Amino acid sequence: MPSKTFIVRAHARTIYTRPVTFICAKCHQATTRECYPGTPPKYCLNCAPRKKKASATRKPEKGMFKPTHHLVAQSTGERTPVCLEMSSVPGCFWVRTALDWFAGESIIQYHKQKGLYSRDMPLVGYSLDEIASDIGTGNSKQEQGAIATASPPQTRPHSARELCKRFKCGDRLLKRMRSAPDFEQWSQSRDPLGIAWVYRDEKFLPKMQDEV
Image (cartoon, rainbow, N blue to C red):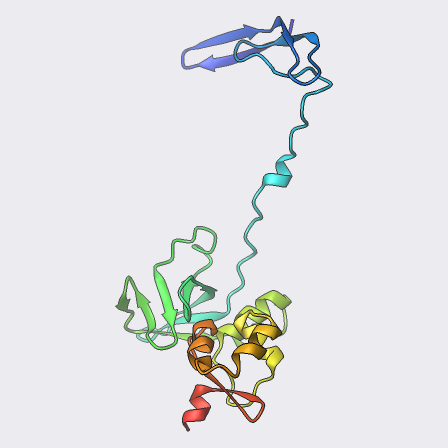
């Protein structure tokens, strides 16, 4: 007779199976199965639904930590490798070190206009220095795109394809919105750094260039 042994604090408990006869809920046939104490089964072995594999419901693991910037302490010159990860706030990024990359407990954030801050207070005495050697060399296409969208745009006309990648939208939506009167506000809400864009002479230009 099959059995299982459980250790409950200071003693061990052994439970045994017992034959249970029931009516299958699917084929409506009487069947007998060896079951452990508890709720009796509803289906026979032929009608029992298959269990899903654990790998099918397992959440994908987070990628390896690959720094994109250095967090520089201006007083001592100490440089800590960090990675910028997009947050739910447009134009705002979490600044994560290798230790909190998987834990997700970083309290430091970066914004293009506010700069570095922690718990809604400016982080004085620190700055970010981009690791230029990592761009276009060892990173995947997805990581390169994240770094590219996190960087300020170059002061040059941009193509529709570049803006679609930066805004993470389709070309049809961009084509429809480029002639809208509120295109600047819409583009600013889509830009990862909160930069407004203008469409002029069939070219997309960042607002910083249009103001010069």
